[in-house]
Length: 115
Image (cartoon, rainbow, N blue to C red):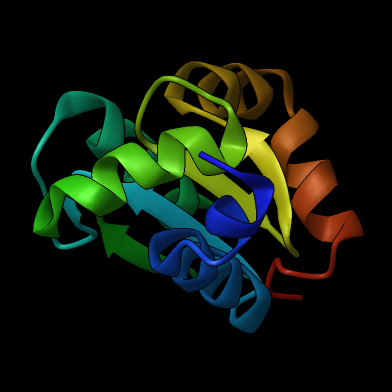
């Protein structure tokens, strides 16, 4: 696949637009009210616990999206959390950052935690 083809990838364009349009985006299996895997559920619970306003994108809506998010971030697993356009990580990283208190600080620094 040439670079021109990759940059014109409609899935990557959708992901880039979504990440650009929303402060916090969780690409997950299912939706925030009904996660469809344990890892997505953990990430949603942590964000809800912290009171973060976020958008959940169900990668199960299309195979192209499910594969596209992995190539977009160069990260093999789902869920994937983006904050202010920056890829933060998957469920394990989010959980570890939450447990250490680092996640709350990071989110506050980015201005996405309620005052």
